Length: 395
Ligand code: MLT
Image 1: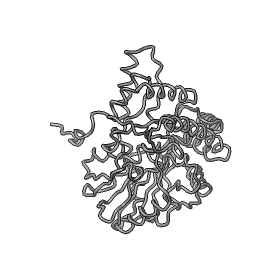
Image 2 (image 1 turned 180 degrees about the vertical axis):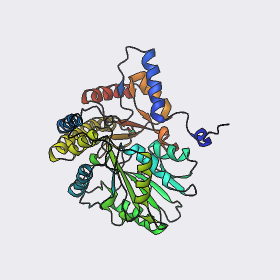
Image 3 (image 1 turned 120 degrees about the vertical axis):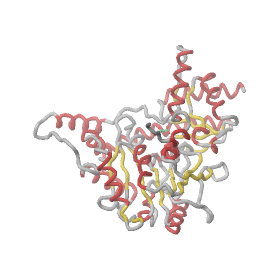
Image 4 (image 1 turned 135 degrees about the vertical axis):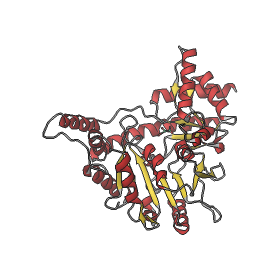
């Protein structure tokens, strides 16, 4: 008799964004004339920038020519892209990445979810609440011991370590999904010092780093001294370069991290070479173009556009006197909705045709809060905020 992984029974019935997609589909079927504006899942709307499109076209053409055709790629990713990532870290963040530390992936989600495979079930996994649901779900699937650290209005949704905090692996995401809050260098230094003292590891999700406009805020955990001995960093081009459908990211596993005499970098290489055959050559060429001067400038224009949308949302909330975090160095705005998050979701959908994400979908501490994204078009964002204002003024 086949025996299933019983841990799946402990998961929510469906992944947060699938639940939302199903609710929106049902609403659209019942209201075929409704013009829905999606400020829910963080999916981009601006097309790929021209240098990326050109690189994708050229690489596709290469694949059709005998002399330039490629089969299986290099195990950790092509050298041209790894070098481009390393140059980017040097140029943008002043960080020198160690040789062999970068692994090219198909985006941060799969790596952040798979990385936990390398660790024993006996670890205590510490996850902020609220948080990107993948950290939680991927550990629930393995039956891990999970402990939550609370993000609240009082700590600005940026939980900090305390002397009595127990745990072995700590997930941090900054700029944060869902709250848009960003750790300062001093705050991250406290986390790094804490991890080094405890012999713990930090999983740092930097997927939204390119939205940071304040030059004093850290974009990589490796801007903090000592992080190369205790932190793995995950990043993605989904939001930086509009790769949500194109799929490319990278994970940095410093060779300095040794646990029990074993190199974490070598373990991850072993895992990836067994279970992953790499990101497509064509996509890696497109990703390389993101990091060129021209490519990155064009991507930054798109990011500035999204941040302009965030400002439209933030200005509306200011006008209405609604408390929120995020929206300045982040594409997410996390607002206090003053009622049950799912009820607010239904109200916003039914009365305004706006889709957002209920805060409680990111954890119990998200109850009473709600996330809006800045990834729609300017026109739709303005229209959504007009509808939003009308609803609030009628309240
Ligand atoms: C989100 O909306 O939280 C993100 O788009 C999800 C993701 O990046 O996987």
